[in-house]
Every structure is written in C-alpha cells, then in structure tokens.
Figure 1 (spheres, rainbow, N blue to C red):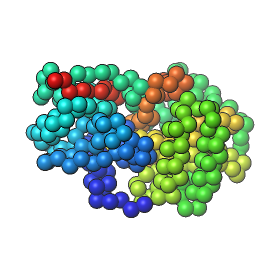
Figure 2: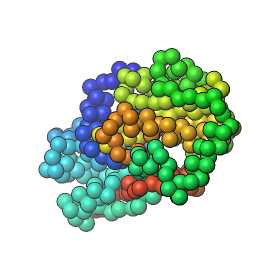
Figure 3: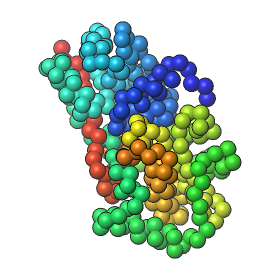
Figure 4: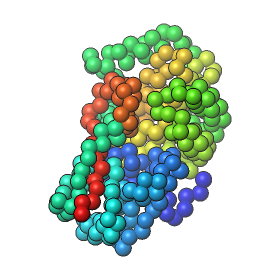
Length: 294
C-alpha cells in the first residue's frame, strides 16, 4: 500500500492532535474509508474529512484556534452542515465560538471505551476476577500455546484464520451485521499484509500449533492506542481474554509512553456493550452530532 500525500497528511494530523478518540486512529480511517467514502476537503488554513455517503463532516484539522474558527465559517456555507463524532472538547469549542448556532445530539453508540493499560496487563482487583478465571481456565486447558508478533512468516496464517472467522460470522451470526463485516473483512485482507508499512501492530495467538486469535491496532497518540481488530476462535474458551491481555503487555513493552487502550464503540449493541463494560473502562470518550441551526 502506497500512502498518497493526502493520506500521509491525514495520518500525521491524526497523531499530532494528541486525541483519545478512535476517529483519530489512522488505521481505523483506512478500514472504514470505503464504507463512509471519506473525502479530504481542503480549506484555507485547515482541512476537514467529509463522509460522502452521509453528507457530514468530522471536526476540521487546523494548527490554531483561529484557523479552526475560520475553517468552520467556511464550512457554514453549507446550510445543512453537520459534524459527526464531536468530542466533548469540540462541543465546548463550538458552544464558545458559535454560540446558539449548533444543536447537539448525544451519540451514545459511538462513545469510545478507554482502559488503563496496566489494568489490562494485570487484570488485578475483585471486579476483574472473572477475566482472570477465564484466563486460568485457558491455561489449564491448553498447555501448548504461544504469542507471536504478526510478521511475514505468519501473515498467511492470520489471513486464513480471518477468512474462516468472517465466514462463520456471516449470515446473521454477529450483532454488527453482514454489511459492516464485509467492509471490515475486505479492509483487513488488504491491510494486514502491509501492517509494517502502515505503522500498525499486531499479535497472533497459537494453540496446539494453530491460530486461535489475533489482534491488530495502531497508536492514536503517544499515550493512547486503538485496538481496531480482535478476532478469536469461540470454541477455545478464554482465547479472547488471552489475546486481549497479551496485546496490552506487548504494547506496554513496545511503547513505554502508552497509558490507555481505546477499544472503540459499542454501536448500541447490547452484547458488545456488556463485553466492553465487563473490562471496567477507566473512562468513556463522549461523542455528539452537531447540526447547524438557521
């Protein structure tokens, strides 16, 4: 995968924001680029990402507060201007500089779940005892297991496992839905072989010599990491718990400055929400939809 100048600018701008939101993860941007038809809109001293399929925008990228204000005034030429995935800080910015010009709608399904990296590494404490029990059960059941960083030697194993995983989940066996799974699968099969070029990371779990799980993600900032893909064999109890813990340990060792892991949204799906809450997030990244009022 060759990153165009526009993609490189987007990648660097995401990281420079020092954000906690999953929308500022470049890997996630690549994954969902085809579904949402992201378009980079150049402004005078800023740029914005337009979601072509929804005729909406993400909050503009600018080097200064003044440039951001001017960029929004430019975008207000669109009388139907709508910003999606607006964070609490961006909401305050709009309320401060554009008083009474925007309405705000809570977007609970797109709240991000943030976890303390040390908590995911150790799973210590009474509230995470069930997670430790799942891991202990895995360790008692499977003596022959190991974790490897995804590289040229095991990428094919990962891709074959991924293909099987998506095949099993298609046809209504996932809360996420077949359409999103299809976009995700296509992106994963294209991205994983280019994992190093993109600047992403991944690990793969082997049990008895076969792939049982893998995970792939990328840093949002120096202190926050986004887990974009996490897939495991449902037939191997504890595989999701192990891959989650081992990835946290891998990341802590590789990036000493990391403090938090973002495990993204629950999309208002009950099962996904319960799973994310069960790991005891340290905070949620709130999101809003902001619409121009005229």
